[in-house]
Each structure stands twice: as structure tokens, then as C-alpha cells.
Image (cartoon, rainbow, N blue to C red):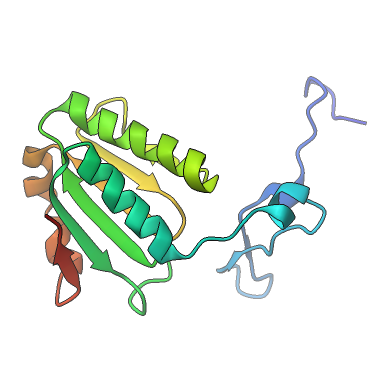
Length: 158
């Protein structure tokens, strides 16, 4: 029976994306997929390289500028690759981001998380294996993410 005042909504602990070690309280990573979830069990798997290729094609098709690909394998557990690119205006940044998320959902059934689309200055897209940053040029110059991640691992796109 749901708790009073909850409008019949029951929260499930299994929906937590990560959990903590009871002894230390530190995060120990994502939970294993639930086997009862038919969508997860039957979902096709794709490599991070296939997702990366789709991301690069999408941002290039939408006329993103100064596309940089950074290999994070062995350097970060967050993702395998990072892509940084620019749009000429807030409207183009938002459009590049929205189309990328739509294409990944259609082609790979990847549900991406997106932050920052409302302002269009810096949009962060998390596809799981590939993190994508779409900037307005001024904002990109201010934050200079490439300098933090670039040493010897970036490949500039056309």
C-alpha cells in the first residue's frame, strides 16, 4: 500500500543507477541490469566506436565546426570517448544537439541525457559510452575543455 499523500506512486529502490558500499559509504558503480526488464534483456548492443561514428556523422551533417574527438579509454571510467564541437549560434547549438539525440534514439535505441539545451550556450549530451559537448564558440573558448583532456589523444575532424 502506498504511503499517505503519495498519490499512489510507489518508489522502487531498484531504479537507483548507482549504489554505495555499506562499509565505506563510497559509490561502487552502476547496478547490474535487472534481468526481469525485458527491454534491457532484448536490447541490441552496440560498440562505443559505432556510437562515436554516428555522433561524428550527425554533428558533421548538421554543420558543427571545429569537431574534436578525444579517446578517454584508460583515462576515465565515465566514457570511452568525448566529442567537442561548436555551433555558430545558440539556435544551431540547440538544433545540433536535438538532432543528435533523435538520431541516436532512432538508429541505436540509445536514450541520451541532455543538459543545457534551453540556453544553447553549452549542451552536454551523455550517450553512455560517448560524451558530447556542443558549444557556442565564445563559451568553448572560455572553458577550454580540450586543454584538460587533449594531450596526445585528440583527432580533429574535417
